[in-house]
Image (cartoon, rainbow, N blue to C red):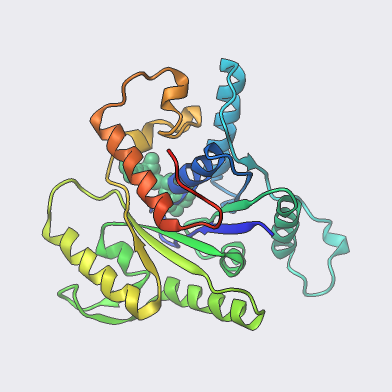
Length: 269
Ligand SMILES: Nc1ncnc2c1ncn2[C@@H]1O[C@H](COP(=O)(O)OP(=O)(O)OP(=O)(O)O)[C@@H](O)[C@H]1O
Ligand SMILES: [Mg+2]
């Protein structure tokens, strides 16, 4: 059985597709067989990222280790039983198609609450939730008091994860390993940054997730999309010397991969 990694957060623009591409590519580069799905059927950022990589490799005549990206297959609507959801069937067929020969399936979710995303969360062996360093983004995980210190209660997204956990428990599946990582963190030591850190540590204990080292705000995470590259590919396309920010970004990705603690993975880049 493939280990399913879901990257989800109902908040748009948290960094899900960026994290998806980097985690999927890091695994592929370490020699693992990785399948990839994009459940944002409208924007398809992750799918486009993966296709850009394919096109770049073809036009440059190079081979870069890559996850195998697949679109969700269409299902025959007429063949559905009454009450059966076509999206559930499409996701199930996509996962079944990859499960046979992949060690990992990476699923990128849309930045909104959809049926597909909800079902995907219940399939997650590992759930990665990138989070912008802002209390507006934190608000989808939990409500806090005006100081930002005291947690008043869980919010819509963590309730959805809680439901997914219940479904898995009922089905006798192993619990979701939920990992939250802060993204686009500013370089300076700011009051807000410190408060967010404390609030997250507090919440982690309350609702059961782990906080992984995150990514700083870095140009490199933004500029590689058109070529479908990640910062792990730079040496292969002839970049001789990584600048300090790119070396630090590589370290951030390495620390994330270690923190994910995925089965059978020894982080060696
Ligand atoms: N660490 C980072 N440093 C700089 N820019 C980043 C970083 N992470 C993400 N970005 C940029 O932030 C924007 C949102 O990222 P991304 O598309 O990965 O988020 P998303 O959660 O997938 O969004 P959506 O909810 O729309 O699917 C993009 O422009 C991306 O290039
Ligand atoms: Mg996205």
